[in-house]
Length: 431
Ligand code: SF4
Image: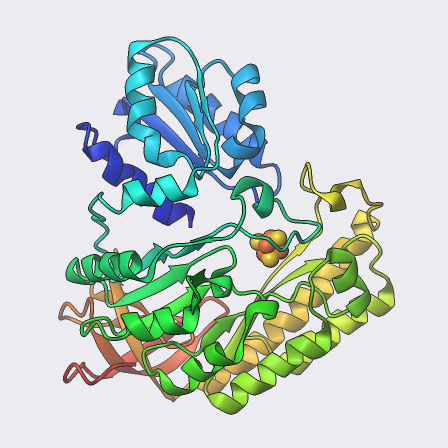
C-alpha cells in the first residue's frame, strides 16, 4: 500500500512543479514514506535522516517530510527529537501534501498533520490523474481495520475500515489499464471486508473484470472472518481472478488465536480452504505466521507446524513476535527469544521444503506468465504466473505486457526459469 501511496504523492506533487528525481544528491525535498509493521521502524527513520544530513552537510538543507504509519503513530516524538524533519503527514492526510510542502517552503515551523481524513483524502485523489504505468499495478480500494488483533498497529495508524466507491475504483482501474496495466492488485488492510453501500469485494471484482484489456486481478490482504461464500464463488467463475490466495492465519493453535483476538479458529480457517479448493482446484495458498507469540507453548507451536503441513502453503511470511508500541500485546510476557528463534528456524525449514516440493512439481510443466519487465541482463524478462511465482525467461523480442506460455525448466526458492512456448494469441488468451 505504501508503494501505491508513494506514487500518488508523486502525482500530487507534480501539480506544484515537483518531479521525481533518481539523483538523491540533488533532491529539493525528501519524502520518507514509512511502514510501522516491521521492527524498529522509528530507528530506520532516524537512520535515513542521518544519511540525508550527511549528503547535504555542505549544501542547502532539503525539505524533509515523513509520511506513512510511523508519522501517524510517532509523529510528535519524531518532530521533537529530530529538528531536521520539516513535517509529518499521516497516511490519511497525504492529500494535503502540496499544502504542507508549500507551507514548509515559506516558514521555519514544523508541521504535524496526522488527522484521520480518509473520506476527504480519496475525494481529493479522485481528481488527481494516476500516472502509474506498470504492467502490474496496485490500487487501494479499502483502508483501515476494525479487527484489533492484539499485536497489530493498523487500527491505530490507518483508522477504522473505509471502502471507496465501486465507481471511483472502476474509473481509476480504467486509467491504469489505459496506461498499460494488464494486472491490478486490489489493496486493503482488510481487503475482503470491502463494503461500499452493501456492495462487497465479489461485486467489485466482477465489475472491473468487464474492463476488456485487464487480464488479471489479485487482491490482498484478506481476513478469514470476511471470507464469505460470494467471494469463494468468484474464484469458481471469474477467470481473471488469479488462484493464489493470501490468507493470514498467524498461528495453528486455537488458544493463541484467541489470545491474539483473531476472531477465527482453526476449523473456520480450514473450512474456507476446503471450500475454495472445491470451488477451484487450481487455488493455492500463502499465509502469515507469528512465531513465539506470548503464551505459545511447545504444544501450540506443534499445532502451527501441523497446519503448515496440512494446507501446504506455497509461500509463508513468518516472523518471531516482536511487540509494537501501543498495542495490547506489547504488555504481555514474551516467550524466551532464543526459543522463539529456534522455533522460527524449524518452521521456515519445513515451509521451504513444502515450497520446493511444489516448485519441483512445476518443472517441465507449462505456466501462463504475464511479462512485467525487461531485466538488466541482456534478453531476459521477468514475469509472474497465476500463483504469483517469479519467472525469468530469455527472449529476443520485447514481451512486456503479454501473457505467454512458458515451460518451466528449473528453479530455486525465489525464481523459476523457463522457455517460451507460445505468445499471447488473442485477447481471449486471458490467464
Ligand atoms: S485484521 Fe490484519 S490489519 Fe486488522 S488488526 Fe488484525 S492483523 Fe491488523
